[in-house]
Length: 506
Image (cartoon, rainbow, N blue to C red):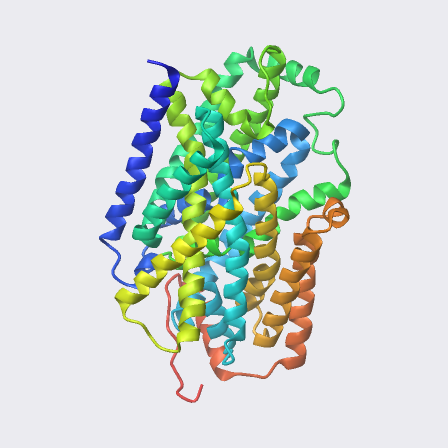
């Protein structure tokens, strides 16, 4: 039996398991609240692993190792920024968002929360947020499809488009039927697989390269132009700031924030933070170590070549392990890709159905019809993403960076202000959101600007300034908003949600 046979067996087992979880979730999905938010019943461990797996995507095992392979530890500013951003998100945003979304008319999507929290009767804010989600998530989902195609091309020598369609097809299938529950529990399995793979490859790799001392020597011999072990050489100060600024993006990522909204209670955010950050630290360090060991290994074996740095983790797994074990390790890459795609499809679907269709239709569909519409939304976004991903030369990290900046700049400041500042208004939120999104779109498409600074920085800053200034100019006191704000704060303090007294005049 050849190596590929064992790897294909491992892959088939994994894909069958994902479809099985999707079917299990399908039997437990009866209404749109289940399909979009799992009835707000996620335990801290499930929420943390699901948030981590859906957050990291294929770039953790493809894009990030590729960046470390080329630029050394200077690229670690991305990891540092992300880790700090994730911790702050879990610490401050998670408990209050969980409480406030239920307090404010049981909002099940980010756009509906903005509308309810800010009493936007025009509905423009909700529509704008829904459109932004669809635009940037289409690029994000597309990056996952590209990663899937690259994975199959590298692992099995298949055509890029075949791999892309296999990954896209299976992910769409279990998401289509399983909804949020299916996406979440497949994320948990996928998160564990990613975690174990990022421990296994560096441990085995360091023995293959002759131990720590020999590995360090080989890395330095492989690249004499920059110090691969320095956080401060290999780029400019602005480049370091841009890399660390990835952490700002966490506050505005709908597919991560929705995990906070689905927690059983605000108090569960404490355990969720501890589990999630531990998972993240180990995973990011594993990705970094895998890349550096790859530098050493290929320096020691000049007869081997690595054409694409983003494939370093894939190549090492196939070299170091028995084909069956390698197949299981390689499925971790697939797991990272698919977990993110499924989560993003669910949020995109919710934007289509909950935040756009309901407003256009101006009537409430039956629970069954809403679930059907949700599945139709998944299908539509998937088809567009596949079309965009047809080009195999698209950079995974570039696609992710653009979408990450879009959400971080458009939603991040608005999420923070809506949770912690009583005086935010719907006009302020709308103006800031639009300015943030437009800034990313313009800045991200001008090479001279993107080369100088990651577009999330100006987008986030301008959003924040505009939102505050416009809110100060348009603020009017509202007893209903004040009552909800105070109730949300108290709910965070007690760890359990307390609903406000409803005033019919509000």
